Image (cartoon, rainbow, N blue to C red; front, side, top):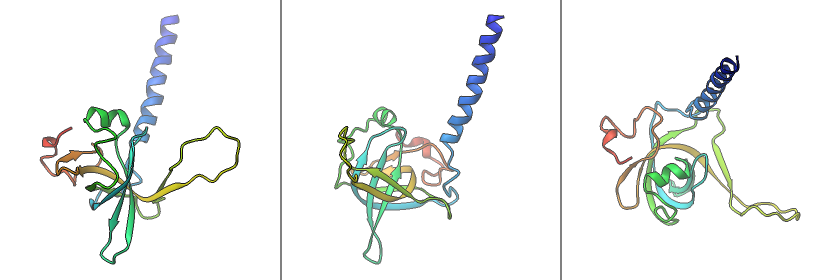
Length: 166
């Protein structure tokens, strides 16, 4: 009886977590039918979980600056790719190809730029905001193409996307 109950509980646990993992990795909020390419200067790089974020400032044709919040792999995944905090630095120029949020979906990502304080003083944290892009491929500062996400239709990577370094 105990084995049956344990097996039943394990099955339920697998089903419940599989659903949440699938939802977590969904690109439903992004328009994956059109790849967008952005080239700009890194203004902040956060190797955090569950997704890293690179803030990139792109100079538009009208001379205005568009800030992008580029979602990427978790810190552990970046480490496995050989990318560390020093590998992508503020001031580096990168090119990113990915997918932007669909019309009508929240299109801004904000991140706190100050360390969390245990002080009880009421302060207004500084933050950085950018238009969200889920990156599929990044051209690194050294010109090397790097797969950034394995989700999407691989419009950025083309038919030979498996040849990129993972």
